[in-house]
Length: 419
Image 1 (spheres, helix red, strand yellow):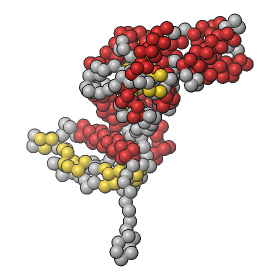
Image 2 (cartoon, helix red, strand yellow):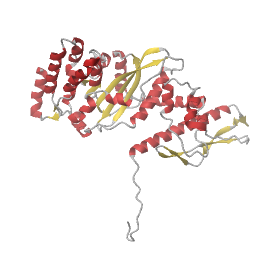
Image 3 (cartoon, one colour):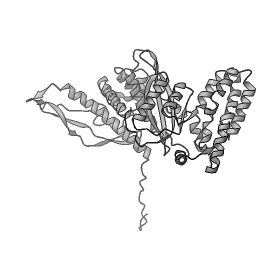
């Protein structure tokens, strides 16, 4: 309000997340339009006027905006020059001259690929959603988009990680059936940096979850500049990953995923007993202190070893690795007790391809998974208690989730060694 008591409108700052989403959508639209333009230029590539190319780029049309679900997005449509003066022009089918609204295809096209929709069938699959706009999604346009995304994945997978530090990393293997091969496994690693932001570090492929395959992934991260090992790695019980961690990151702690462990144990008991067994397991990982967790371990063994030896042995064999989280801040426990950051992030992109001829190739599967993971990354929540990550990084010791002073460290380490 000014001195004349007139109200002024207040323009609120744009949400940073929305800004990132808009930038991503803008880049995607630009890539799609460029792919359409390339098709037009290829169509006339053999036509020349006085020895020079007949159809050439000629700047851009005036910038305009289109309305999307995440707000208005600015677009610039390229122009072409016809040296033969026969009226050849470039009109984008994805963004026609009077288009005011559009839909997000950043996730839809990769998802359809992973569901087994071929390039030739893509236009028909999208027609009920995009209507007339789907005409711009011809097989040629989508093939060029796929080539752009493949180059993006290649560039991303060799990006520099110099001077980057990741305190925790989560690892998991996602199985895919590609061209009748049910042994291809996508190896995924997500890390959290010192600011608490989760980041996709690696999406690669391997044969099952073998030690050799995981070692290649970790060595690749090192070659990109990630020389400082994380403080803790979280994953399921796949031996391949842990053997690779011992080789490449020998100082990194191991935390086995409680969700995977619980599922494995419940598979070894009758269905009627599963709720009771699940409660007993929760008493372990929900315990306030390591000592209480050990007591719950002992009680589980005492109650169930005789009747359910396989379930009990499954729990006991990774005892120390299951309780590594007690040496880290309690605020971080919900994040590091399980590999849920990967499970939840990939819930919507968990591969469901079938053994059919339209399944994508290895390269396509990797590329489309990468694109979907990039989209999912924009929605990942910052680590709770991220300010404590600086303490973890600097070597501060924690006992039962609480920071301990230096004079208590030696006693704490001695106690753990005795156990």
